[in-house]
Structures are given as C-alpha cells and as structure tokens.
Length: 134
Image 1: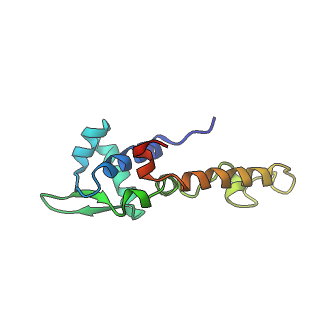
Image 2: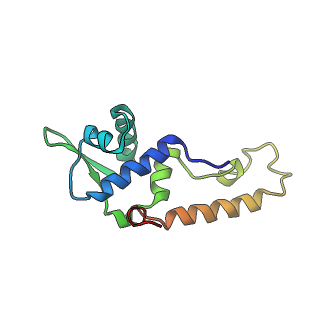
C-alpha cells in the first residue's frame, strides 16, 4: 500500500490549519493544541517547513508562524516534498541505476509515468483546495 509518512500527513494538517488563518501569527503551542499533536512533533515539522520556505517565523512574545505564501499558492506537492524529499514511488522514479534491476526492468518507464501523474496531481492541489474540499 502506498502511504504518506505520519510527518508528511501531519505537515498537511498543520499547513491547512495555518491556511485557515493566513494573516495570523500562531505559536507552535497553539497549533499543537488545535491540531491535537504534541508540541514536540509540531515544532519538528515547523522547522522543516521553515527550512523549505513554506512558512515564516516571528520571534518574541507575540511570535509564531505564518504561511510564507497565500494558501492558493502552496501545493500539496511542496508540503510533502518538504518532509519526504524528492517525490518517488520507486527507486527508479527518482534516479536511474539505484536498483539492481535497472538495466533489465521492463516496468521502469511505467513507474516513471505513474510517478509523474501522481506528482502532477499533488502539484495541482493547493492548501486552499484542501480547505474547500477537493
């Protein structure tokens, strides 16, 4: 079964929450409380999202986090890639010669095509879409 990691799933939840209040600066503690995750997990994900330039951080007593772009400009592909790295269903979808069957595999082209279709779909779904229902 294909499945996102828990961190990628949680990242979409956190980003969707931030998308509901795009003009507000929200603390990690508040986000954790609202999305029902531990502060540790939320902080870890926020750091990754910050490094990917998907959110901004503000220091100080009134500090917290905010989306770096409007919800309609952030895609699920960006969020998932920030957590998971380059999107690839199989080793050969990412880079040639990572698999011992690379030169003999008759499925490689198919997996690359399927990988592109799924990535394109994720890249066409924004946080705004997630809030409104896809």
